[in-house]
Figure 1 (cartoon, rainbow, N blue to C red):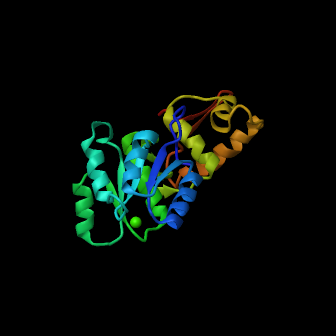
Figure 2: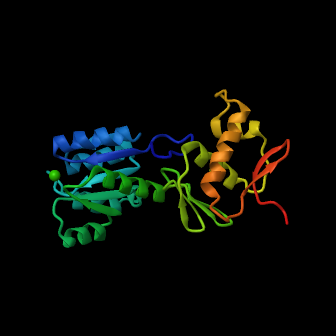
Figure 3: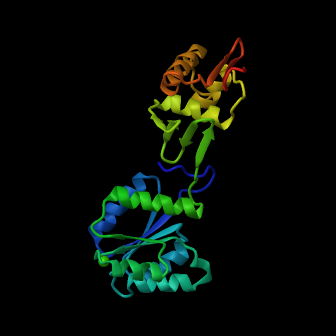
Length: 238
Ligand code: CA
């Protein structure tokens, strides 16, 4: 699932494609990623569906019956309501000229057939992040630690760290509140969730793993144990 904004409906993607098998494949993959899918099989229908369904993004095939994708794009850009609607144009040929024309007409991005589904999904997510339809989490940094929350990558002093999912969430929480001391119970609530019953000692186990993963040889321990209080992302004073 992409990181949807809490309380916001799932983003809707209008797929405009006249090849039924490709349409089915796209619908399947987009729904699996948590998107709502609307479809149109030609250019005229695409314009109607945009007005009715108010999609968050249009995946627009270039070669369409009735009205070409290029013309649909042009018309959408002319209307105030859809001037900024994210559009990814799907071109059949890999010629650079097509890409240039697609972008000139106002498409935000383009992809050439045949395309890899992963690549398309990445472009869709990138565009939805830019338009604010899905949350951008961004990057957290503290001292020599960096966490790229969109790519789920963590590094210390430029060295990539490999964290388990729980250690990742623990570190993420600490990096959101550097210097603050949290009790085991507070960490359980924040990282494991209130509904899950876990022994407070489990926190110690994961803190140990986290330390092992982030503290390289000769590096300062950045997790401070505060006696009878808990833990903090911090270094010992002095
Ligand atoms: Ca087509």
